[in-house]
Length: 242
Image (tube, rainbow, N blue to C red; front, side, top):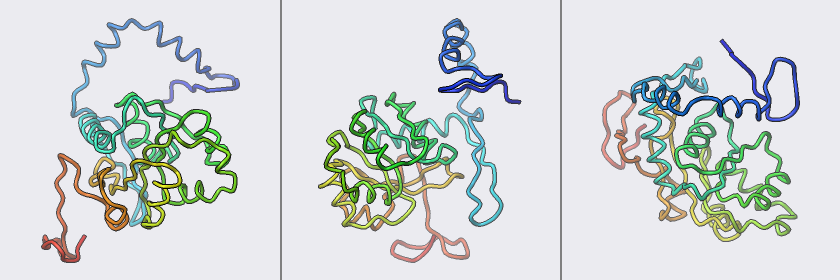
């Protein structure tokens, strides 16, 4: 059952303000917090995230604390996310891309989280300029929109460092422009699914634009993958499969 609702701004009957919520935390003894946290094990359930339902009814996928921490500690280390980053979380929070590669990864690394309520190009450009955003995730259309904005030159985008894209093919020309015109030092793409805790393969920062465009990278550390035919039999390298 829902025990309370917290508002970041505004007031409404039966809710708490953000400052009131934080004050409740200050009133809790640190030893009590540590005692409660120590009761968790890596196998305890962290969440139930629903699949998209593209090939059937959405299914609730149960994942554990250990799975998620291992997966997104590795993901963060692979892309180079750190506590120095200002992470603009654009993707939906109910999806692995926004929730796990966003909130969870940033929490693990101590990155500064900047959630976006609704994607508005002018507002995003202003926030990059104002908050010195260094990390932007999202589909290729987001970066194309940034490149195409007629007033892009009026904003300081020099803080941009890391782009994590996916969900659609990324043309080589777009990757090159992201590097040369938007200033991203690192552009990567990845592949994953809800059932696998969000991600299984990812490009590496040193990969060429061609490799990033034409693949979803290599298996992450600790992940085993195989490619099979329509009958489920493993196929050799270079053979069509899934």
